[in-house]
Image (cartoon, rainbow, N blue to C red):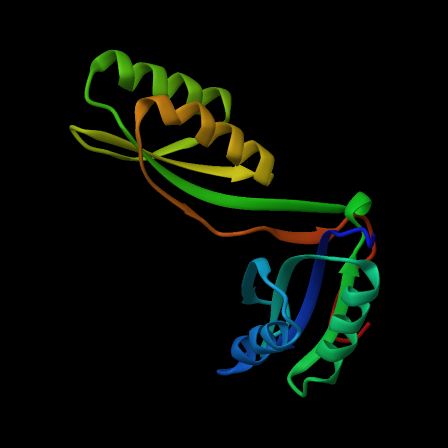
Amino acid sequence: MVQQHTHIISTIVEHKPGVLYNVANLFRRRGFNIDNISVGPAEEVGFARMTIMVNGDDRTIEQVIKQLNKLVDVIKVTRLDPDHIVTRELALIKVNALSTKTRSDVINYADIFRARIVDVSSESLMMELTGTSDKIDAFIGLMKPFGVKEVARTGITALSRGAKSVKVDE
């Protein structure tokens, strides 16, 4: 049986309309589900960095990388080494907080996880939390007994540790 694992692909692309569609369409044609994707401007004007997380075996991921490299608007594609990267995700979590005790408990948990309270209403608290996906999952798990009203997550973004970079000119 072929071993499937999570792969994180960092891609530098031209920052223009249609590029995300073309990349997502390539994954669709290959029958892959993108577990998450984050896109934002890169350090150089006119380029964007896509961080794509996908499950698959090594051989299939190599094929996807080759196909990505063939797309006109894709400048550089690198599979990141999971042992030498820093990953982060951002989440906004809105929780019921009807009583003073509940509000106090939620704030204490938020402090422990270094979450920031970003909105307060008479019925709820909203926290902003940045960290690994596991940290965010753990925090959401702790909030469930209070009643999680809404969750919005960005998906992971990642960079290689140390001097190694995925850049346009390297």
